[in-house]
Image (cartoon, helix red, strand yellow):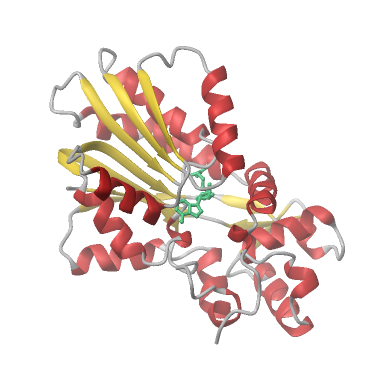
Length: 292
Ligand code: SAH
């Protein structure tokens, strides 16, 4: 069945608004930062083969906070190294915010930014046309594989760009968390078949295992306060519901039975728990660090 709704990601301004609200209401970026500070430095220590210039690439970088945090850790590990940083991001609004953040962040002289306002697949075409043959030391695909048509091809393409000691880092929702439950239950109604919206890290790991590709795996326990979703007509709740379902104006557009089903599931102990009167959704993620 084709999903009858408009995908949130096709409406970049509303996507940005609900994404920022999601960041505000969740421990998403905090969990990523903890990983970046505690675990990533050792991973970054092994890349680059002693060269003086590293090639880094962020795909679906959004507003850049996480990218800059990783670049700061890379700089601490390799203080003498210059970095060519390719940014691939199709949303004008997101890219603009990233550029503003980069311009305001001190001590980024070691980075040369290349801004690519395009999707991952447009970038793939662009890269092949340029025939640079350049190899990458570090590439990341963070919370973006939902928006490509074929995540396996996307992972394979970016992995093929890695240098022999390069690393590909992927973050995606956990195959065990609340999102996976929501997706599994309402795939036919919610998931846009033009993109791979419903893909979890469980699917990515199955693909890597099938191809015998080596990776390391980490779980990021995250949660999201969805209390307002249960107050009819609440603007915050509606934007959060859009983000959860990836549907533009879900509560206006969804039939009553689907709306009720989704709200009941979001509140179910499989997806959420109540803490001090707030409904906390399990938005756990997983990281894989893929070998070349
Ligand atoms: N990595 C960032 C942003 C995640 S949100 C972070 O974790 O903070 C997902 C991002 O993917 C958005 O910035 C969105 O604009 C971008 N995106 C959407 N479709 C894409 C596509 N086809 N290719 C690459 N990026 C895409």
